[in-house]
Image (tube, rainbow, N blue to C red; front, side, top):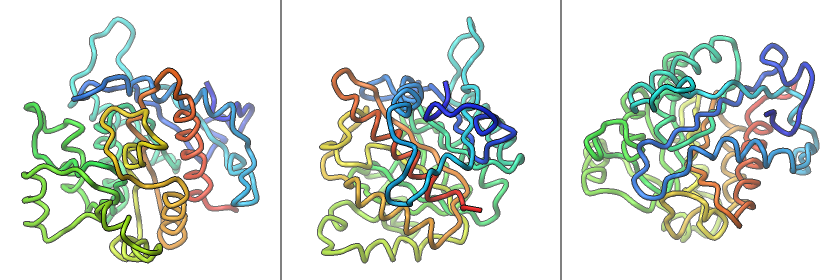
Length: 290
């Protein structure tokens, strides 16, 4: 499966600047499972969107987009434990980053971001994480695991600063941890009350020169993204999200990303298309034009 149906040299690892890495994993899901089907749904939907980006006035795919072999156990092998999955993602992403590729990891539940984030943090000193998410994900453990989807930001904060946008659900433990660090998310309710996009300037100001974007699609409002395992009301809108991503990309160097937690659902194929378009927008914003 390719992205957008691209063929030829620009779809190969050697000829592409961008690599999409599918990780069909949702072992730590705590509500509705099925995000393991998300990567395939994104790739299928991408064949039904236009290559030309009317906002950018060009075809971002011209940088080359390669879809790598999925990170998954071998046929017949048992499902990986979260630690095995995180290690496998970190190894694969590290090799691609060392090969000078811009890697966008396709989840799967949000745990895949831990391996991808660690790989980028090891390569880029002082890396900052921009987390777009309905949930703070700041628990130290959840269901007995430190690598649950509910602990992603806590683990990423161990290797770099995390700037959180769109949060509207947080545990008591997570809130206390953030207070101890002297940090606050950009709460969804405060964003909704802002009369303009001025809050985006504050987001950019908190980011370092080099940024990794971790995007849980439940950060979007469920009116446009109901197909996710743990939806929360009151999220970001489509155009608002694109303005933020483009502003970040214009002011900072975005070196990688992940997009997680799409739960393909019968009758909601528009959500598959939305995520495919989001990935394509990221490529257009993040990969410099030569």
